[in-house]
Image 1: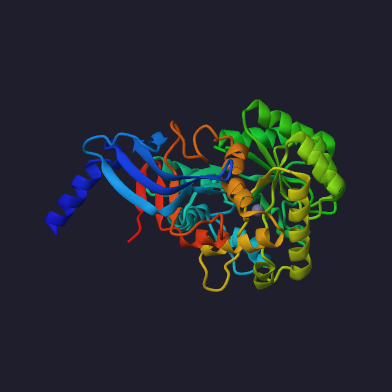
Image 2: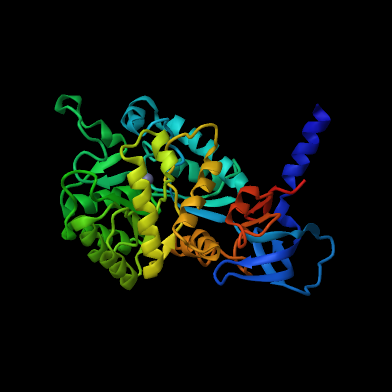
Amino acid sequence: MRKLLLVVCLLLAVPAWAQTIVIRAGNLIDPATGAVSKNQIILVKDKKIVEVGANLAIPKDSAVIDLSNEWVMPGVMDAHTHVTQSVKYFRELDHNYLIEATGQRALRGLYESQILLNAGITTVRDVGNDANFAAVDLRKAIDAGWFVGPTVQTAGKIIAPFGGQSRGIPQEIGPFWRFEYYDADNPEEIRKAVRENIFYGADLIKLVADNSDYHYSLEEIRAAVDEAHHAGRPVAVHVLGGEAADNVIAGGVDSIEHGFFLSDEQLRRMKEKGIFLSSTDFPSVHFAAGEFANAEKIGAAIIDRLQRAYKVGVKLAFSTDIVTDYKDENRAQMTWDYLAVWRAAGVPNAEILKSMTTNDAELLRIQKERGAIAAGLYADIIAMPSSPLDDIESLRKVDFVMKNGAVVRKPR
Ligand SMILES: [Zn+2]
């Protein structure tokens, strides 16, 4: 046992990134263009990609990983997740705020994010519902190297008009939702909530614009955007459609989250302004399993607006928003269920891959660090035995994952 411990300690003492790693990539996909280069060599050192090319000299003493029969691409990103939140039914979300403390949320975030990384999802943007900044603690723990996990960005507490995303709460119960949300009901309160979020560690600002019968005005959206952009943070806004979406688009946010009922005209304005659609394309079976009202109808609306958004040419950001447990699938398997919705909307496979890498990296403002396999970027690399350009469901078979230059899993 002591011997084993010593070996483990020695392994830990020599970080994987001290050595050059050579990856032989049989088929290397560039999701930005959809192009495939055959028989490429990727050199990785000190967490980053050093060089990529066909005839590179192999440095002495390098470790070679043979992916000659694999399809290699950058790690997948999810622009809208809630890794610290999980319920069986959507209606249980309020209940969860009351029975789960921040510590438990952080541990769930660690559990879920490890499952996601192991499946090839190497970056997640957590957009709130993490109690008291549990996802900030998760990010810190992973960044410190205490645990293996994806790159985490977090929104902190969601900023919303009075009541957060709760409904039908009796007045005498009190505003328990403030465990998860900032109530902010005018531009000054919004500015304060943005600043508090940034102070406590938020990488982006998340607003919910239209969860109630009232919604944010253009002036209120502009206050959030002004304050967040001056601090270098993008603004993500939950909005479904109608006048609220008009205000959100005119206010110059970075992404619309969901947008299930956006009109063609609104999509055109989004394209003009370069606003991403973070489309959270729930399969209707997930909605139905979580007992969400009108699951079939909303499922159809989601497919229809994704199809229209693609036709208009809006920048699409792959995102999921999974908060419920479905059958015996884990969260990574549930993520891949979303691919069927993209296929049903007629989005080509190359465009789906671009949405989950190139586009997400741009929205998350990390395109100079991640989202491509190119010299100077962090080595977030995945591979699978068949081409996702031919069959997007190949992503379910990811059998190689590298995160920041360290091998998370290899083909057997
Ligand atoms: Zn969400």
